[in-house]
Each structure stands twice: as structure tokens, then as C-alpha cells.
Length: 155
Image (cartoon, rainbow, N blue to C red; front, side, top):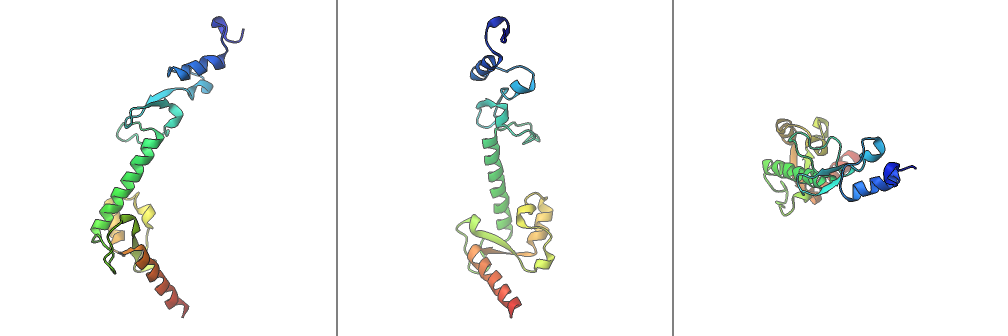
């Protein structure tokens, strides 16, 4: 008998372990059915709905969905802080309606150490050093500035 004394197959036993939110066995096949509770949404989910190393600094264990939301919010807060540091509005036209439409333009591309997407991983001191080399422009003014620079180089 494949299922042992209870008369059920191993797959059927694992199915009920998952269904009833019980821990499965200890072998690799049943580990995917181990359950964890998200520290943010408080849902109990299978272990595979959590990143392996994500968010261990503060002891929290967030599910993938909550951890992704946390990272997006952290990224927005970081950009908002950088926008405030540069004055909060476009240096050319004064636009300040949407932070997502504001961008950092390096005055001299040769002095660029990091692009903004990599700067979010750096300390605030390193970020401010890089921001000091930049102007805060809205997306339209930024494109116009690059067009102007391109035309200067072309002529």
C-alpha cells in the first residue's frame, strides 16, 4: 500500500496538509506546502509566496505582494526626499504636480557617477553628492534639454 496505514496516497495526504494549512513532511517535495504568516497583511500563505531573503533586517516576514508594495513605497519616499532636496519643482518651468514626472538631469554627463535608479541603493550622503551635480526638471523640460544638447553636438 503506497499511503501506509491510513490507506491514502502521499499526494492526497499532502493535499490535505495544504488545504488544512498544516505543515507537511520534511522532504523537499512537501516543503513547498509549509505555511507562513505575513507580518503586514496577516494572511497565512504557502512558504513559496515569500521571498527567501527579503526583509530580514527588521525581523519582518512579508509575503511577496506586501514586500513589493513596501519596496515601491520606499522608492517613492526616497524620490520625494530627493525632489525636496532639489527644491520641489522643475528648475525651468516650475512644474510640481506629480513627483513621477520630475527627473534629475546631470548638467555634465561626464561627471555622472551613478544613474538615479542605482542611487536609491546608496546612502543619503552619496545621493546628495550626486544630486548636487543635477538639475530637477519635469519630463518635458528634460527631453527638451537633451534635444538641445543633441543639436549642439550635431552642428
